[in-house]
Image (tube, rainbow, N blue to C red; front, side, top):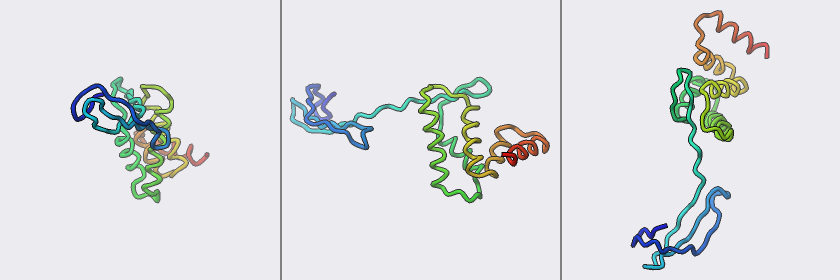
Length: 150
């Protein structure tokens, strides 16, 4: 650790405590050279997720991209913004808790479909029509019949 004022590396910790519900460690420090006091925070760096695309490509996971896709499916549906945010948050949490650094786009799609089935059937069909690339009315009908049976 270096003093932000004089750039000396002779810094001591005066006090240490947890902040933000145990997820962050707060340390009060003092430079032994100039006496300047400052606070640092230590948090666990969230592992970044890489999405393996169907075409073999890779890209960084984007919760914004996930949110946009789900928003499209839920457009003009009676779902609150808060419920949608929670839905996206739960999917992201599930993906990160798996401990895997890479996740297939198909797994993300299946998680979204599974959640939408419980949240809103119309949104489910909207998302499924894009995700499963329906190319005929018959494939749409088959998916709808499968949804109605459950």
